[in-house]
Image (tube, rainbow, N blue to C red):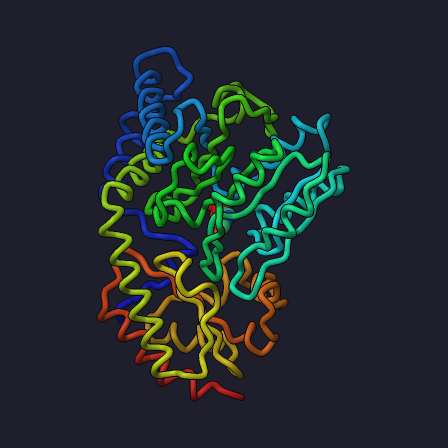
Length: 380
Ligand code: PLP
């Protein structure tokens, strides 16, 4: 059976050029980047090339990029690191109710350690309330952390406006850009972003490698003790092969950005148009325009999304009920609840996230499958 993969928001396959670039670093160029001899020095050189590639993609300086093991670690390092280093200035942090658990749970831990956190509401399309943001700022606010684009409903936040609100009050601004990198062009300097996290497996590098940009001059503490790697900010022998892959992947995706973005937008818009025409009860979640190019999220009333996923899987279709990280959770997604969806709709929600190898024919097959399956599951 042909597998049709529509879950690129959960993870992407490793692309061929990325795989080829990383392979020598397992077997031939296996040196430790901290070693002095030539094998070590060439690993270090590869590491620094990857750092330059990430920096170039973001409009940052190479010394502002720190490699980590994933997007979750990047968020932990940025948020905890900045909070700990700036606690003399204040203990208040502002974030939103629809962040990924890597941000929400980090903030909840900080609350247990004496920080106070405001969780901003979002409207029905998932946009943060900018008035509430302005009104929540206190003299003790040290950090605002708002995700660039939501992993479930795809809504892209008004990041420049948020950054400028933060800037005016002298507050550090962090954004979780794990879903945005590869899908949106981001220039951290132009957008006044102080800190940003990303993860390789969302743009065709392997799982288990990430990076965080933290602007030069911003104080942050390391949160993992050990060696002096990553400018003494992230202890642990660098995962050279995967960092090489991340560098290649980010460079490659932005080289073809226009083409890639257009392709994903076309697939998404075709899918949305078809679902709305053929399954008129379906409700699109997230903003219609300001959404990730590859993301579509529909709620089907009176349908259990788990049963829907199972039936799609029988046809070789991979999609998701919410985000991959909420799988197994009984409660409806906090994102869908925050945008005001009823339980009935939240439990019937299907996220499809398109990628570079999907075709229109694949999407037509998906729509055809949904038109067969969805009515058969209603009120079952
Ligand atoms: N932030 C967002 C918005 C995500 O979608 C994800 C993963 O899906 C993460 C953070 C965590 O990234 P990682 O899986 O690399 O830990």
